[in-house]
Length: 109
Image (tube, rainbow, N blue to C red; front, top):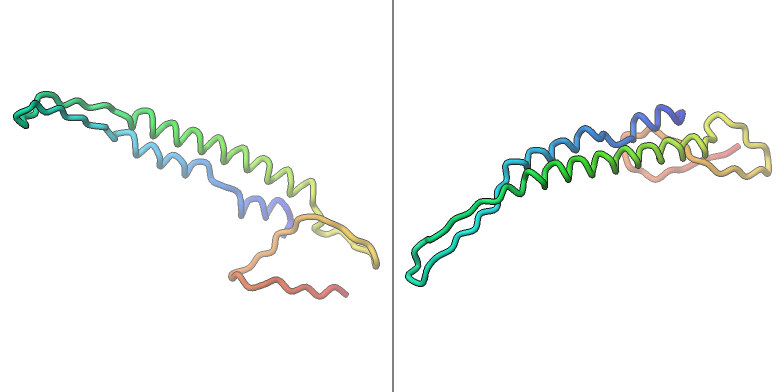
């Protein structure tokens, strides 16, 4: 496949990391008891207000950065459509569309 098509099929979707915002309502509860076993104090700390947005934002930034690097590498190492002459060695990246995970076998003529 051409590099642009390969990129579109394999890139990460940063928007899916917004699901971490579902952690926002999480609270951390602590309870204190006296020597008789009676509850004297219960407190709640809303850790989800920090945890959810931090995970979502951090992962979105990381995914966007990885996508930029991936696209750059695909374009810098493009060999799609190039002619490799007899005895010549070329290195690069190519995308191969497949429905399975069979091993790759190439016959070069």
